[in-house]
Length: 399
Image (cartoon, rainbow, N blue to C red):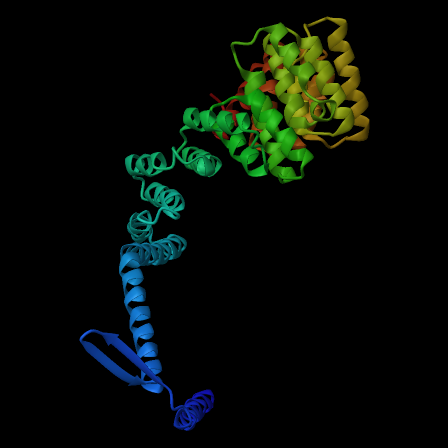
């Protein structure tokens, strides 16, 4: 419709000019002796319009010619950018599809675009890492070193890949750089936790677990297991003396001290260093909060010396607990063992036989038979002692 209107307008203008020119009798004379040129005014105006149009075309052609190199460069740049964007999209698609070889090849094409070079290098590094090509991974990462805008992205990528590769030293170096730059978000803390766990840096593991717990960024089960693992390694380290174990124990939060796993490990650590009184105190406080067979076993293993008031006090504690848990085999075994050590033969035999009748676990059965054999052997009842030793052997538990 617009084209039709323009054509009509053009014809109307032509008709108008033709009609107007009929009433224009003027002429133009160009005189250059001995030459003389006479032109009608209408024809002169036409020539003038044609000349103006030719000059305009010439100047426009010259301008376009001058701009041609820049336009060609811009065209090539736009084409390279389009191809780079397409390659970057292909690289991402292939990476998420699990085709890491295709992803790395597409990333190699995408780096030709300056705007995509950094991100393409990070994708290439991740793809090379998935193919277990550590050298190529480092080459890709090195391409982003000089780009300050990608510093955090490079460090995060390097940290994650090093943690996955169990290279704790390099991962911790990346963590230090991120912390120095003030980058301490949740994902950094999670990766730092894994790196410190791999490096067996247990105090730092505990600190990071507490930080993640404050932000509700760690599942309670995982948090508890990590804390138990850290406490286990700290308390069982043979290089720690009694004072070191005490300091570690005092640094443990009160809520964690009464958990069965931590209390049992601490009790054994104290007992191994000759601090049996403190070991028994730890177990008694933990049992007051939560009953656990492993704590009862630790209480049995940290028995006081024969004839000491502490041993009699242990027996009293066990008898008090037995009134509340009359069918607990571990408690009966512990009470029988303590009575055996105190040479209370009748009590010892009664509790050990009760433990044997209520026991379900093979280790409890073995220990009960062994203690009864020792009891009968101490009383000179050889046949009965040998019978219990045979029961251990038949169960395949005696060594």
